[in-house]
Image 1 (tube, rainbow, N blue to C red):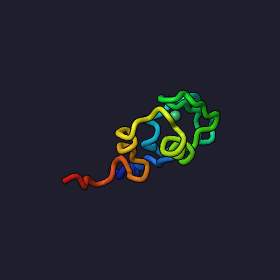
Image 2 (tube, rainbow, N blue to C red):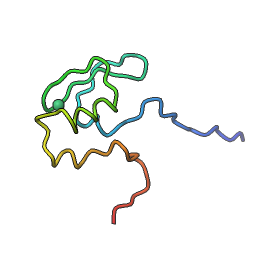
Image 3 (cartoon, protein in one colour):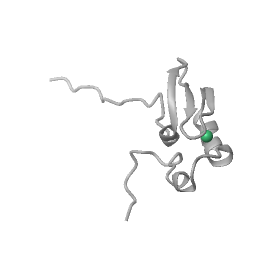
Image 4 (cartoon, rainbow, N blue to C red):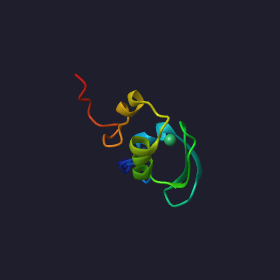
Length: 84
Ligand SMILES: [Zn+2]
């Protein structure tokens, strides 16, 4: 019996935590999406997680600090649990 090759799902599209705060639109076909801020409705024709994150922490007037604390862009969503 042949061993199945590892079902490694290559993360071609990192599910950044920032997408919780943006409505993702159409795919651009190159790993980027259109995105709209759920809070102030700013539209990004080519939304990149870094730019979205910068918007949330620097520019978004309508997001609350509580929501900002919840952003986990730097932490892998499926990392080992370090919650104590
Ligand atoms: Zn915003």
